[in-house]
Image (cartoon, rainbow, N blue to C red):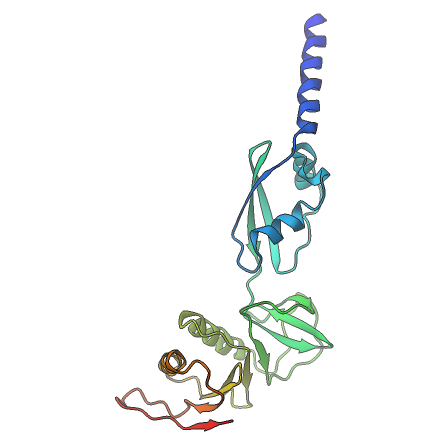
Length: 232
């Protein structure tokens, strides 16, 4: 009996001690759209949420905090005062404007987020015809093959480190880029790697171009190409 009582006292003292502890070291990984400080502020938004016992129970048995563009997150307790947050962000390739909101979609055209926020590095996609939009459902476009065009284009842009404000498609699915005050006519999707490689070189030499650059005439076999440029 005395042993049981002593064990209960030790356990009680242990949990009281834990209740007084605070999580003061937080490591964040997997985040690209948000800073570590923003993720920390979203999950640990009160003094109570920094208590290791409350934090663990809330993480295990309650719905996780809702953070725009974050699919989910995982908490790894290194110690009662040291926690790692592993972030799993939603994959987005672009957004369309719809009813005063930005509807962000993934590589398959699924709407993953609706917000008024502008996500850095994610271009606006214009020129698409679509019907009523529903969150977590495919963007209802006439030709779903356009999503492959968007994915391929955004991937090549990312590889070439070209930041684009808007990608506009016409009825023939020919793309036009808007980069600050520069409009770039790319034409069809043929030889896109070469076109964007040329664009990268041009922007490196002339970063403040303002006007319309026509790369739709790009020809890989031309060793000394010249491109039409209309200055604003």
